[in-house]
Amino acid sequence: LHRLIRRQRQMCIRDRAHVTDLSGFAEPAHLAVNAITNKIYVANHRPNQGVIVIDGATHERRQVVAGLLDAYGVAVDASRNLVYATAIAQGRISVIDGATNEPLGHVDLHHDDGKPVWLRVIAVNPDVGAEGHLWVVISSRDGDNERDQLLLIPNGWPTLGTPVPLEVARYPQDGIALDADRDRIWLTSVESGLVSVVQDGEPVCSIPLSTTVYRLRRFQ
Image (cartoon, rainbow, N blue to C red; front, side, top):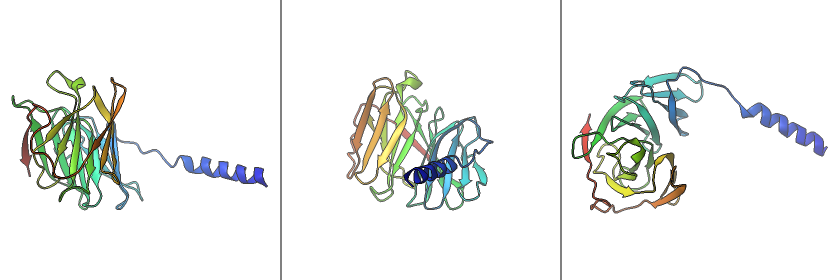
């Protein structure tokens, strides 16, 4: 009987381990899931391909370009049904309405010299503040103009407040996760071999945590 149960469990796991493969993406980078609406959002990194919205039930897809030149990071605020996506070299964060799949607007981040801030991955903490907090990764691996930082944008859509930079270990790139129960951001840094833990919360200090100043331009 024990062998029979074990064999049945193995068959069940094998049958369920792989559901399907979806094709037709353009260098898919990061993805995020809204478990409430059963929608999946995939950032297409190839130029001007934007974000693909997948219906989790039917696997039907819709492309939302959202003004993104080289989409890379994507995150979901499930409580407000909003999607945030980054474009690396463009220095842009675009906001998508999860109900209509239509772009709501975007913000562009620039250095004082006017050059765009290269943005990597993004996370959303929906439970802090009136509009949630956004956390965006910048890596010095993207050029001499960039520093290894985690940017806190202390308001989500529609306010999108002034970014507050936090210095982190060398070469953060792709690993970011939110512990929503404890309001903590977990971040990996490739070259340093470190994992950083950042405590989120309110109020947000209005004085930047470094000498870097970023300019934010908002569009609708």
